[in-house]
Image (cartoon, rainbow, N blue to C red; front, side, top):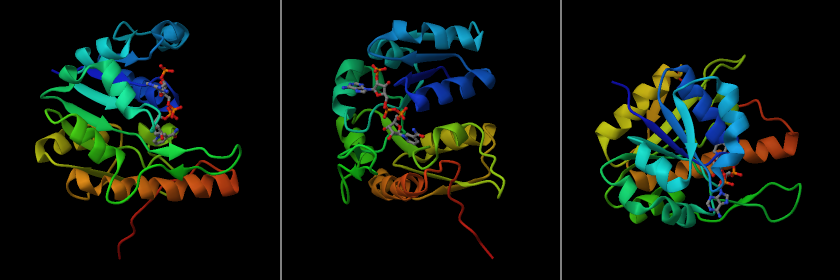
Amino acid sequence: MKEKIGILGSGIVGQALCKGFIEKGYEVKIGSRTPEKLNEFINSLNSDKVSSGNYSETADYGDIIFFCVKGTEIENAINLADKENFSNKITVDVTNPLLFNEEGKAPTLSVSYPDSNGKKIQDLLKESKVVKAFNTIPAHYMCSPYLEEGAPTFFICGNDPESKKVIEDIAEKFGWQDIIDLGDIEQSYLLESLAMIYIIYGFNNNYWNHAFKLLRK
Ligand SMILES: NC(=O)c1ccc[n+]([C@@H]2O[C@H](COP(=O)([O-])OP(=O)(O)OC[C@H]3O[C@@H](n4cnc5c(N)ncnc54)[C@H](OP(=O)(O)O)[C@@H]3O)[C@@H](O)[C@H]2O)c1
């Protein structure tokens, strides 16, 4: 039986993952502080497997919880979702801790080495198995990793090997082939810094159809 997916955050990322999981036949609840604003989105999916809820209902629902909230609001989101709801589950941290200082300018990281959102979330949710993944990829490629110059690389880290395997299997269902495990959750700072490279390139070139590929001989 497929795991039930709880998605915390209903921005571009939350909605892209929600659509991707529904297309793969999963049952999904997507969470917002104001879930009623998602009615039109939910209706557009034309599926009886999708619903919306507040953060606490969504975290309670998910066997796997995707954490897709604004990267500077992780503590607030966890408090709204209730820590207990994450216990003994996989939490996938998709966030980047971005500070938008000036309008129209590229953001900066609000936390950096040796700290990171991934590590912070694992510290806050000691009973949960936190996996950092999907944060180095633009939302529109997360569930459909097909670019003209080839398939990009999926970077992942986290402390629990079994949980990483579960998320790698999901990534493969979405079409990811080249998956690189960078180690434990402390390595999240690398994934968040890597994301900054595609973000700064995107801002400087006003171009968002790119992703990373590790090339080998
Ligand atoms: N956009 C991308 O292509 C991309 C790619 C990789 C990673 N990421 C990362 O993924 C995360 C989501 O990105 P996004 O672009 O979808 O949208 P976003 O604007 O960064 O985040 C939107 C979500 O954050 C929630 N949020 C905002 N303030 C909050 C608060 N004070 N307390 C609790 N929740 C709050 C909102 O909840 P409500 O629904 O309640 O308003 C909304 O659902 C970010 O951390 C981003 O850096 C983005």
